[in-house]
Image (cartoon, rainbow, N blue to C red):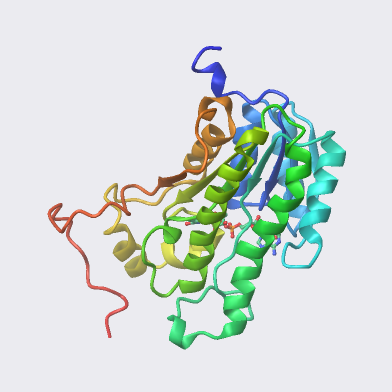
Length: 279
Ligand SMILES: NC(=O)c1ccc[n+]([C@@H]2O[C@H](COP(=O)([O-])OP(=O)(O)OC[C@H]3O[C@@H](n4cnc5c(N)ncnc54)[C@H](OP(=O)(O)O)[C@@H]3O)[C@@H](O)[C@H]2O)c1
């Protein structure tokens, strides 16, 4: 196989969660372009249909497996439905995730001491509990595959200290830990498991930040590349982790953050605007 061909996923039966928009939508399209057949999951069927249209345009088989991963039993149903419709599973990209939010859905950046336990439980239930449930159920399908790979969409927030996003950061750090444990536990079954840790990426999730000039300027001052990531840039890394190009890579957390998580000791001299969080 040539190096370039090893990035292909021809015929790989693939579940992508959170595929209705943002990073998950870009991942679904990228994997379809690489030849994967896809089962697409999220809560919103109408939006999933648009992703399905893009996958079908690439000439690939596509199935819809909607579900609310906050609901008990939903992960099992999504995984089994995907495997039934695709005839098995080779790849799972578990990407669905949420930030802390107010009852109307708008994101919060409250400190832990200003947030409540219900919010913590809501974030952990979608970001971590559903991850465990999904991986547990996927194992029985992946173990039958000769090319099994799992990609958990974690975050830079799971790698560095992230005040004002403590629940989110803890859930994303736990996903990295789960990826490491499963990678080692499932290696002899031929199942690779890795985490992907994007930094600030331009999606609905972060619209509250990139559409607010001072907040965006402040955040980007901490990104050495000086800009937001686009979803397709994250999708390229997900394709790498899912594909035979990464056949000897397991138990890793790939950080894709424009350098934001790299300590510079202050020597890079990148100017910082006034903090929007200053008292
Ligand atoms: N954007 C960033 O800067 C960034 C950085 C690092 C990591 N990430 C991670 O990347 C992943 C995707 O983020 P994104 O920025 O693309 O977010 P997004 O635009 O808000 O998309 C989130 C996706 O998850 C689905 N989802 C949310 N809650 C769900 C639930 N209870 N059950 C099933 N599906 C659910 C959403 O679909 P429905 O609403 O239709 O259910 C949507 O498809 C997340 O895990 C996020 O933590 C994002």
